[in-house]
Image (cartoon, rainbow over all chains, first blue to last red; front, side):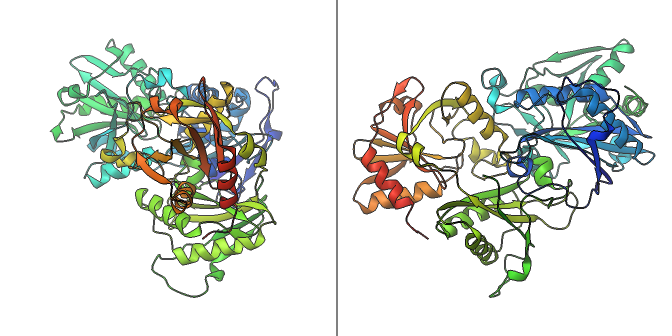
Length: 294
Length: 294
């Protein structure tokens, strides 16, 4: 979806406390030029971001997203975002969203080359209609991410675990999936473990147990996955973080890709293997994810 | 350096042939807003780029850079650039450069989200003064790139070999090098082979033989490295592309990082090992690289 609303945030110190940050926001035309060619986000994908789901002008899981933005900034040596300032910017953007489903994006760029401060902005746009894919699911292929499962621990400069603007590989993986006749991809580590999808987390069901790959630094900790685990736990179901060998994928009793805007999408096939689906549970999950949550 | 000149290129078909593309160029203020927040270069580092050295308004090695831009575009499923159009854009930018050393950057982005065409632009700016570092050299540290040497062959979606805008890891590696008291970094493959620097190629001298890691897809084929090899070959020296184990680094008789704008910089130390330097040859190399070449 094209952005309908955009707000430039004038960054302030993380520690600055005040009731009203509205004088640090500048509304800009989302379709008009707003960024200079010197922006390091455009030159080097040098920055971090978040995508927040919005339901009827209520932004979902705002604090977990802001905490993850701060964590990404820390991994990338960017100045810590002022949480209250960003929370207010999200509130302004949410008020500008259309009714129904929308998406707010937060971007914190390293700024203009040799410039004094980061550049930061927030956009809002109506979401695509994902009702069909939430019902019918996606076929996925597994793709090698090239990294071993534990590489993040000894090589933090690979920025695994940060949601950076350097997403070209994620986009290329989705194109490769489409080339292979699939709808989405699941990344595997070079040593044969399940990681995540290019723009979603993975949840697998084995019997009555729901598991997701442990976010040990090599993958992003999904905000929607956290919400789903909370929901399942409240219903007395067992959830857990595990090292999942790729060979376990075809024997799952059900599997979902979960993300902030598309929400929970059943996986109907992994490579050549058809997976069982759980339509009633998928409907329940999305009903929950579409309810206003903080 | 801040950009002093910027030109937006209105993309045309790769096959379109005409003498004058100047009506497809729009000069913009390099410091003013020129790109919308919907730009996929800013949102996802989704695009490719080149940096070209300029000496007294002569752009160096233009065709090898344009060929590499086209190769990067192909790897990223971007429309093929029109080579003659880009050549003319570089000529316009070169004419706007100050005397002395400058840098022209070419950027081809996937465009605005859901937009019909890529976005493309060219910038020009004075280069930093690299005369000291060309003489005094750099201390480097080796950093794990996380990928095995042959991963590019079976996982093209990792976009290794393309010069993409997703450069956050390259920038993080330079910050890590500075944290360790070094000036630059050399990436190693996870299986212990020498790759490249975050923004430069590596040339090692063993006796009278000059070698660089073979660009088998996992690393970028350096335009400046090609020029240096041409220069050395013309002087009857032996050059070659090899698999270089990381354990060979400390036993090199000399080593350089070479890139389009900083040119040839001697490596004075790798991790804890001091390397011999070859000041006369370094001076000769940079003299050659500073001469106008096509």
